[in-house]
Image 1 (cartoon, one colour):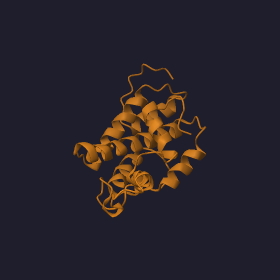
Image 2: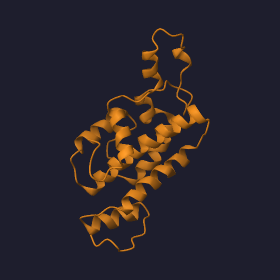
Image 3: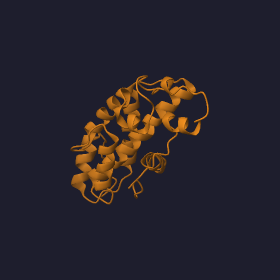
Image 4: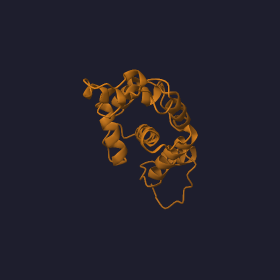
Length: 176
C-alpha cells in the first residue's frame, strides 16, 4: 500500500511503520515499561498538550495535526477522508494499486503529512524546537511539490491540472 514507483522512500517507510502501529508513541512505550513507575496520566501529546500520544491521535485527531492536515489536503481530492486514522487507511487500501496521477499525489501527501507531523512531534519532545501548524504544512507542501516537479506524467492534461493546483511552473522540459 505504501510502496510504489513514485513514493518518497523515507516517507513510505514511516507510513509503513505507522500502518503496522510500530511507531514509538508514548502509549506503546508504556507497554514496554509495565513494571516502571511511569505515570501514564502525565503523558500527553507534545503537539497539542491535551490527549495521549498515540498513532490514532497523531494522525490526525490532534488539534495541531488536524490543522496541518486540513491545510495540506486542500490541494488534493480525498473525498470522504476525514481526520481519523481509519478513514485514511481505508482510502489508501482502496487506491493502493491505482496509477491515477491524482491518487498518487494523494498518497504522497498522506505519507509526507504523517512523516513531517511525526518529525515535529519528535523535535518538540527531544530538541525543544517548535514550528506552527502552518509552517509544518508548508514543509509538507514543499516536499510534495518537489517530488511532483520530477514526475513523468502520462497525460499532459493531468500534469497541467496538478501543476496549476500545486502552483508549479511548467518549464515544458517534460513532453508528457
